[in-house]
Image 1 (cartoon, helix red, strand yellow):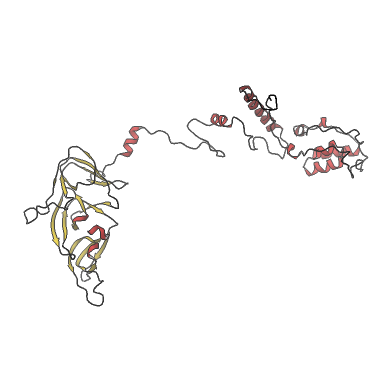
Image 2 (spheres, helix red, strand yellow; image 1 turned 45 degrees about the vertical axis):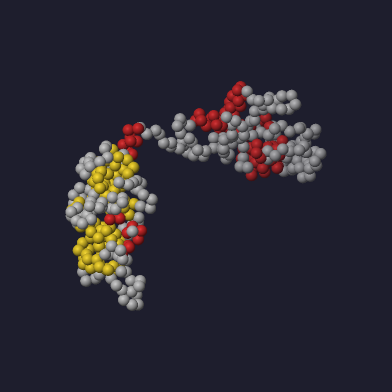
Length: 392
């Protein structure tokens, strides 16, 4: 604004504009011009303001002489549209903007398709203008390197050239974002191997599958077998050999089989089911046959039918030193039982028990006999409780 007022001869207004803009050198020059000591011309602009000089305006037919000290230029108070040429706003000209490269035109005013030489000239001109702005920006204004970059027609190609191969630098980010590199096949296979813990026969994968690895015989149900290494050699396991009806397979239709070792196998987890591996460690476990999936070497089994509910329930007794695999439909809860304080529970919730416990059906008395738990446990130990669907 001070430059415009100076060109129009309004030295007092120019001095005030330079003073508001924080240009003490130009304020001094305007005061000297007002005092009649000197009259600077636009050609004598300091270098820091030369880059921001506005485009030339039409010279008025008669420019008033510089006023005397303390007086405003003639016509400075009242201006007419006839004496003053239309002024172009120059506020934006005080900031550095790269020049626009004009494209060649065809007849009729249609832009011609830019050639490779045009693109090269456009990029070179923009780079030169940016470099010039970085060194010629006035104090108090942002340098070109600190201002937002002007989009280039070759922005995609320039972006690809400055980023490292295999990385993408997001707009506005401080650097390239990391991209996953290729994994060596050996490392991938080593990290994806599934096997039980060292020294164990059974293991449950993070996704729920049961992994079996054994050098000796193993007792497991057949379904849902997903993968097997080696020869498949299985035979049903009798419930209680040498007893009436004891030759029936343990586990019913989906019987528990004896798998000859060595064995490496993978069993899928059934919908709404989960595998649970436990170690007897010398304890005794009474378990519903429906909840048993298998066991390893060192575990002894006995089967019996007990009157736990209105219908007899097949129960298997597991003892010894070794692992046992349960197949459950929900989380497993253990309810403690103390001597002299019997535990009453609904029969269809009982999956098994451990310790010296004696289950017996209980008949309730009025007024709560119809809804009271019908099975009582006496002794010392713990009762394993699960979802009713697991006990059927």
